[in-house]
Length: 191
Image (cartoon, rainbow, N blue to C red; front, side):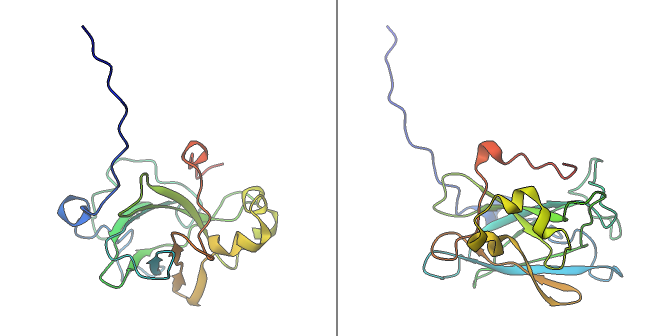
């Protein structure tokens, strides 16, 4: 006799990241001494603007020539090869930092960095994009133009200086970052 079982809710995403997911050098898509290295950093904040100290972020991006990395081994850091992928956690005040290259696009679309956020209380990971602030084609990007005008700024990094970009992630609230739904979050850096 088969007994029917009721569905149970999914578990939340964390907090468990400090045990297994971060690894040494995961935030370094290129070494800090790389001549074209830029710092991508910011805070992960909840709906009350409080820091989330145990979030985990992953980024994927094209290289400085607009080419996505298509070889295995992005977990391996050799000290000079751009990997196209990185992972880091937030610190006790909700801050994160990556060392990477500014991506470029080979076509007319603006370059972006794909970002995934894992955090306690989330039923699923969150997907978003980080656009570069000075890209001339922001006003013509079909995806960005599909976002309400008053929310587009939540997808655009701010330039701290020539080698530093800031992108804060707001999980809820009045400044909530625009997130992609899972079914439409097919990240294709060549689209």
